[in-house]
Image (tube, rainbow, N blue to C red):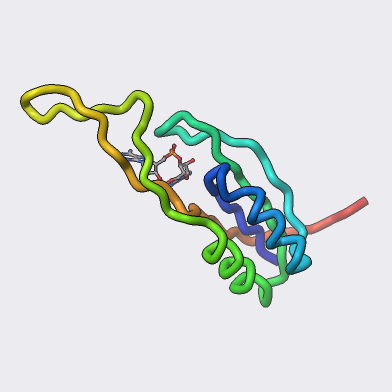
Length: 105
Ligand code: 2BA
């Protein structure tokens, strides 16, 4: 079994939960905060058999969008002043790790 950890934007989290329910993929949703933007995002924990990993990734890829976002705090110095700069966030940051044991009591 594998644990898929997916960090997605809050705006995509409801649609992703719905997609997982439709596809019968069990998941846990955690409120999280990005270290760079210091804004809320959503982290999904999804334990799946290895043969379901690709399908899980497809669900995430098809649901989570890339967006431009102007950080509330970050600015850049270009010689003449400080300006807000849009950065590209998402669609999803995904880690896949081995599960040594899986128990449900
Ligand atoms: P944040 O840390 O809030 O980062 C939001 C976006 O800011 C990133 O989007 C990226 O475009 C930009 N960014 C992050 N760190 C940067 C830096 N040092 N310099 C310049 N720009 C930077 P994504 O790459 O799509 O990441 C979205 C969220 O995924 C992140 O939110 C963080 O919560 C998570 N994440 C991304 N990479 C990670 C990693 N290697 N380990 C753990 N979490 C990660």
